Length: 428
Image (cartoon, one colour):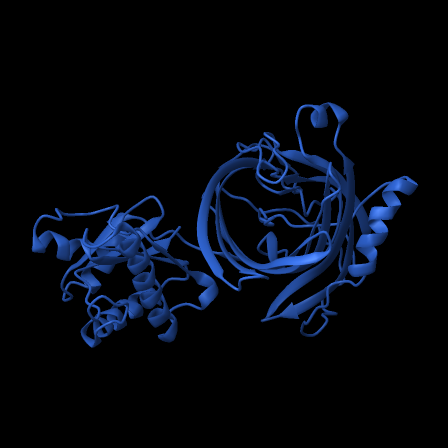
């Protein structure tokens, strides 16, 4: 299970529940009874006035949410695997309505590294989803174009009145789970909850005054007998989540957060699936560079470099390094290419956007070998850019395309040399 967040994060609830429900919650409490720990700077006493919390969402605004989730998955109480997810979620305000609600366009990208308990093998992959939603200035999410996303709706949400440290409130939200593979369910499962919030204090971090908000919720759900009779494998589930959010009221959005969660699902045959984890994430503003002005600016800066092309694309502005030179049949960069990359690195440092490094090969050798080599060469370029302090490892992504996207014919050496390339995309 992967926890993808929308720029809206996770929180507390529930009304009363029966003794049968208490049993599963007692299991959760035994292993997840502590609150998330926090490390922060000085508590601020400079601003004790009440604050009206609202999302600021003007047309064209763009925010990037990057999170790291470290999760343990248990099968019948035995550790099955541990997984690290790096979630990259970019959101742009497409349109603001008269009531200041907004239509949001969001791109979800997830990189996953799984360490299997038995084999120790690593598996990395990337995936993208594109979703539109509507969000009120108070944080309520509606009208998602994807029934499986976002996985958490309407967190955080705020009342219409100003709040002071110590104030509490509740608000409705829901979790959405994708059980198509795990439980043979064709539709997303939606689990409502009532989130409990507390405005705890103000803190100054990196010269920014932030508002600290604690949220938590728990949920319980039984699947219907009709669904079970229809072939669904899912019987029941429960979960608890606790989170601390540092809100930036000047930005009108989250600055960063930490979270703990534990979720248990049962299959109809009694099989128990349990997920425990911790997460932390940050939200930053970014500016698109995917326009003619930036293209011309970068083109001018690299005009003395050979075999370099700049193009606008769906994901952002892409710098393509054709005929990139590695040691034969390897991912080791030649020194001549490192000199070229150093010049490109100085350009990339001017922008805060995440980077996507894509490797490509000519159509030589087997398909599997080409795919592996393209991935390795993308990773090699990414590692060198990290070494040059262009980005840290959480803000640079890699993928390999083998020989599936040639830019020239593979029937000539000239064409094959163009197809041996690495692309650096400054991402939107």
